Image (cartoon, rainbow, N blue to C red):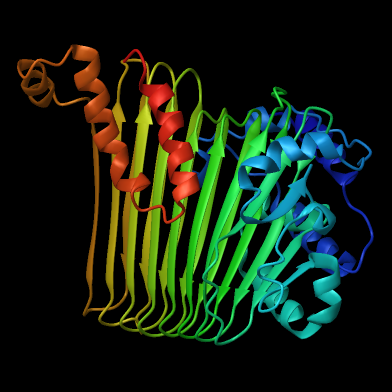
Length: 429
């Protein structure tokens, strides 16, 4: 990485800074990003992501145009019977969203409007965020997002219908897009949220930097599914979660065919008897990359967390996993588990894994583990001995590898869609 390349990249980003009600927060995030600097490829969290390719991009800003209605219908038609919120080219567009079933008991606002309406909440939220956040790419998401989204589920609200957040990008959009969402779940409330990334962009210069902030109150439950299909360019997802007493968070992330994606998680289990679960599946071929970085922080007693990340790598693709379970001295009686499984289908494919524990309490149950291997030859032989072809046997075993993650997705629509895409991936194996 040269200083010249780095400066050119930063200069192209600065064009995205603009004035709105979040100006003070944006500038604080931008200032902290500049103080921190872009990540160095030798840093552990970026060793396999190799950010130097990112610095060579000139992510010029384009004038945002109101979307073509007929074009938008093509993207939203599969969800016409669902409640959905639409991001287009990184902007939240309430006018083109559909959530009449939910309006009476949850609140949905553009982030700039929500910052004025819920000023006290957001001042505290962003102050704490900026104090703790160390990832420069996440700081960029806050500083440079175009128009974000705020979803508020008031206390004692059981939101039984799924809410889908659609993130649509097209070829003619700005080369830096940062969909920014904050979801606050009140005390004793529950909801199911799904984010779906869609796009026709074939531009390798595209950089997408979504932020997903989840704030769970006491006794609340949030189920979140995230799916991304065939995303070009570089995608850097930031998931930030805070959990209060007896809250439950379950997250499933499935990536299929993304050119280069990095998923960064920081989960704070701040109250007692909190449960948190992160499940992930990355399916890769060609020269595609998927990198997962997780920090699970147990800060109070009696917490339970589970991480399970699976990577299926073929041809010249690359995956990496770095996960840490951090258990504070006060977090006695914690149960925390971390597992990474990698299935390598080619001699040229690579899978890196670095699970670790950092424990300061003496009465805990914690474990971590990682496996990397190929398709089991004995299982393959057994299936072929029952009359299946080699290709059919491989497809069954690969499907079995993925099914544990797919079956955990609560949304029938998304589960069915992903299953069809995986069938395409397995064809010819």
